[in-house]
Image (cartoon, rainbow, N blue to C red):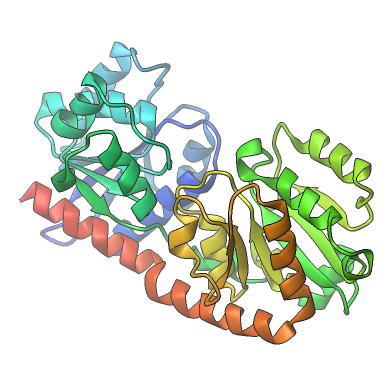
Length: 367
């Protein structure tokens, strides 16, 4: 390692692996490439532990049962000391609380990242987290930063650090036409793609309503594929059947071939009711796909209306249908918006920019 290298403890208490964890590992890879030592503190048996071992990171499994797990605080504190950690970076609510106390008791500088676009609750706990336990909070979008301010977090504690599209996830491995054939999409059909957890927050029910409201002739020229899994999958499939659009819609389940799906698609749709930033939208933009998105949270920051995609109000079925129809009928618009999306993603949402921003912050706090 370089002489001025830092030893950084990254904390993630999630058992599963979703968009936030993708970002944690993007950051870890970038920090390691820059010559720093990164240690991941995570739940034993979690997807994070498996992935960290696969990628060759140092891993410290620590059971973090709940917000009152004093044993976890003691374990984290001891292991921070054993590894001579320079700085702690927490990434979820539980590990921010537990890891924040462990770092504070060791006199270590600490950073936490906020990804949710809901207002933090004003009160003692918020003041403890953002004014005592952590020196800075990284907000992934202006909308998230606004939610922090609304909860009373001091402006001086907030750093706007957008997340990034992972180039490895957006690079296709198979031929576009072959993927479309596998998805049962004809050459002359416009393929709309959605990706994400099948939860009400993601708004896929609104997308189905908008698809069903299209003129039947227009609907015959498009297909919709949705990648992802979640508790609402069966309900969404039943909704598609009830609306009479089951022949135009397929739910693909969990997929690891994001790059292939994006390359096969013509338009990406993210109709969320809430969204901190929308990493799926960033990935689509990085692949040069126009994005139809709800005007909520970080999506209104990542997607520029009529430059990189089309923005509609959340739960606006008619507005979403109009956006679908616009991009079905105008291939030139699809091309222009896709080009603009790629330019914006390459300029603002790269792993290098995110890693450099956090490293600059780490240096300020350690020094």
